[in-house]
Length: 537
Image (tube, rainbow, N blue to C red; front, side, top):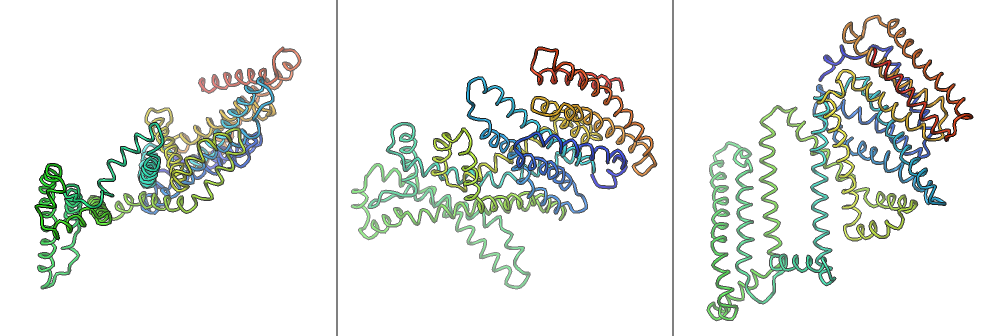
C-alpha cells in the first residue's frame, strides 16, 4: 500500500492530534503507577518501533531498503516485547517477593500481574496511536511483515540449532559414563559417530570410508553442476575447452561416487566375513598398510564430511538464487533482505553474547528465582556456552514477535479489527485495559476514570475522523465538526466519570468492602454505561 492510496483514508489532523495527544497524556499518567520504570519506557519505545517496522515493510518506493530495515529492527522489537513483560516481572518480583506471610502472596501476585498488563496496555496504545498516523495496520502489510520476520528468524534459528546440536552431542559423549539416560544416549552417540569420524586404528574401514567418499563426490558433482560456470566464462576461443574441462571434472565426481557406492557393500561383506587377518593375507603388505592408513585417517574423513557439506550448501544456495532472480531486481532485494537482516542479527547477538548473558544472570539472581539460576541456568550455560544461549533467547523473542504478527493477521482476517480503524481501535483497547487494571493498584480514582473515558474518546473520535476523512478527504475543512463530535463524547464520558467519582467517595464510608473493590465495581458500571452509549451510537 503506497502513500497515494493511504492518504485519502487517513483521518484529518484535528482527530489525529486528539488521538495522539490523549494517548500520550494517558500513557504518561498510567506508567507513573508502575514500579518498573525502565521496562515501561522500553515498552513505549517498542510500540513506536513496531509501528515503524510495519510501515517500512510496506514501503513501496524503496521496497528492498524498507525490508532490510524492518528485518534488522525485528530483534529490537522482539527484545522490547520480552523486556516489557519479562523485565517488569523480574523487577517487581525482586521488589514484592518474598512475602512476610502466606496471606500476602495473593495481593503480591495481583499487583505483579496488574502492573504487567498496564505496561502491555500502554505498549499497545502507543503502537495503535503511532500506526494510526499512517494507517499502516492492514491485512496486506501485516502479512508482509509477518513473512519478513519469519524469514529473518530462519537464520538465527538455524545457527542456534546447529550450535545446540553440537553442544548436546559433545555433552552426551563426555558424560557417557554417567548412569541413566545420559549414559544410554552418550553410548549410542559414541557407537554411531566413532566409526564414522574416529575409527579404530590399525585395521581397514573400507565400507564406511566408501560411503563418505560417495556422499562427498555426489555433493561436489551437484554443486559443480549448479554453478553457472559456463555463463561466467567469457565467450572466447578458449570457452569450449573450459566447458569441456568442467564437464570432465563433474563426470569424474559422479563416477567416483557411483563406484564408491558399489564398493561399500562388497567391502563390508569382506571385512565382516573374512576378518582383518584374512584380508592382510590376501593383499600385498604394502597395499594393505596403505588402505589401513587411508581408510582409518580421521583427518581425511573430516575433509570428506566438509566437502559434502560444502557441495550441499552450494547446491541449495544456487537453487535459491536461481528461483529468486526470476523476479524483478527489486523483488530479488526484497526476498534476500530478510536473510541478510537475519545474518546481521546473528552476528550482533554472538558479538554481545557474553555481556548479555551476564546481565540476564545478574537480573535473575536478584529475584526469588535465584536458586533456579544455580540449578538450571548456570549448568545450561556451562554446557552450551553464552553464544548458543543468547541466540536461543533471541529466537524465542523473535517467535513472540511472529505470534504478535499472527494475532494481528487473525484479528484483521476475522474483522475483529477493521483495516480503516485498526490503529485507533488498538490504541483505545490498550488504554482501556491499562486503566481497568490500574484500578487494582494504588492509582488515583480520577486517573482511572480519565483513562477509561479517554479510551472511549480515542476510539470514537478516531473512528469518526477516519470515516470523515474517507468521505470528504483529509484536507477538507472539518475541524469544527470534529471538535463538536469530540466535545459530545467527552461530555457523555465526563458525566459518567463524575457520577462514578461521587459514588466512590460515598462508598468509602458506607460499604463494608475494601476501597479498591468498591472502586473496581464502580469502574465496571462506568464501563457498562460507556459500552451502551457506544452501542447506541
